[in-house]
Amino acid sequence: MADRCEIYKTLAEGLKQCSTMLPFPGSLAVESASRLVLVIVAFMQLKALQEQQIELAERLAQRTVQISNLIERNRQQLCRDHAASSFILRFLDCVRVINAFIESSSPAKKERSLRKRFWDKFTVGVGAAMGRSVTASTEAFDKHSKMLDSLQFDFQSYLISSEANIGPHLLIKHPDIRVFWKCRLTNQLDAKWEYFWDHFVDEFPQLKEIFDTDAGAEMREIFENLTNSRNPGAVDPKELDAIFQPVNQPVEMIVREHLKNHLSSSSALKLATTIDPTTQGEVHQWTGYWIQVSHKGVMELELFVTYDHQVLGSGEDEVGKFTIEGEELAANLNFTKHYVNAHIVNYEGKRVGKDRIEGSWSLSVDMFGDWSRGEFLLENVVRHEDHEDSSLRRDAICWLQQVACLNRVRNWNGFYEQFDENYEMETSFVFTPSGRVHGKGNDSIGFYTWCGEFSSQTDGRKRVSLIKQYFEEHAVYYNGEIFEPDAGELVMEGTWNINDYCSGAFRLQMV
Image (cartoon, rainbow, N blue to C red; front, side):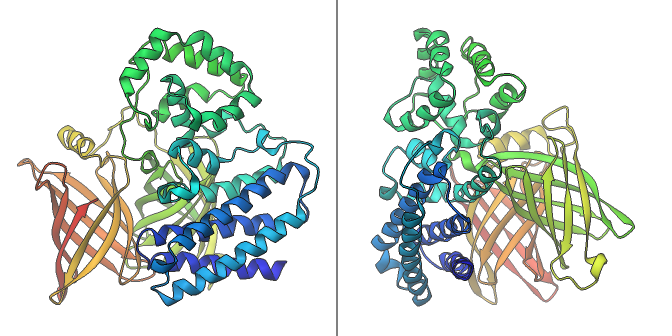
């Protein structure tokens, strides 16, 4: 079994690399397959299956069939690349073996339903938010393939503490749960929310009574008029975070208070008008230090964490400027710190409360023993105002909000010019109120991360000064302007350079 799992891990990595070379929707299918294989590898590494895990086994089996069906439907497109077709065939074989393993390992008798203790976020997301068959929607796989990572983590956590009470106060930062609450408050419940609601009623029977008692017809009409949408997006997370934070109270009491407060005023609930809630996130300034043997190095950085667990950021310490790219799963925050034109440091951290991160760091290559590793600590710099200490003028912040770039990851496509040839570039940026810009992307050279600054001139021009740091390679300096050629369009144009002898022009347009 161990050898088989190693083979599947290699397969998953190959699928991930393969997906970057494929066009839509083939790229979605192969990327989803890669993530799913890793989830199921963790499942297969269990010594034995408990009866409470039967439903999870069945769901994983269904996911493999559904994703393989998606690949099958796009086989002609996928097989244009020989490497892709090879990995696809191996994945379909992997599906058959996994299904056989699950079928042979599942106990015959179901004594206790796993769904009362395990929140299947993947099923909830696809079934509730998309409102259609999983196999009929490549968009569903695109939006929720990232959830498979958290599904793997939650499954492992469940095995460690099967009796843990995983309630809404622990999962409230998840976008689908915020969507669920918004639909409940706006009386937009229909069949697509039924699966999710069953989970809530099973765990907290008082919720239906609370909602029916406190949400009168008049208030329901007010909220309906506010949204006027069947797929409304997400509630502002700060609203619900504030409600569910005191976990020492019974959950039903917290929910009751929440409904009373927010149903009493139409302006109390801030409704987001976002293109995609998963691109949103929270930005915080952090200060702290890393320890190398007996030396303590002070560092300051900014982290932007999206609601689907991506981590982007940048900062500076005595070594120099650096970019940050990683992910957050539950309380674990892992990221890669890439110094500009220099080396890489890997960080593995854990949140301790809301305002502290601590953990360990290590160089990508262990060449110096204890000098290659150490510990670190970060503390959140508390801001009393949303835009305190921002280098941006108020009009610039308002403009970023209007063009839907502030605190939101947006995709940009374009090219950079070199030796009279244009090279395609697909990237993503997030602009924060501090005036910083973070991002990541891919081009013909490889994967890269961004750090930089955004500024608004007195004449109204918007300028960017960016550093594009290729993974374990060189850095490229970009300078340009952002403008709106037409309503609803956003373009970034300027020049790039590595040195005086290597430079050119670039152009990017926001998708």
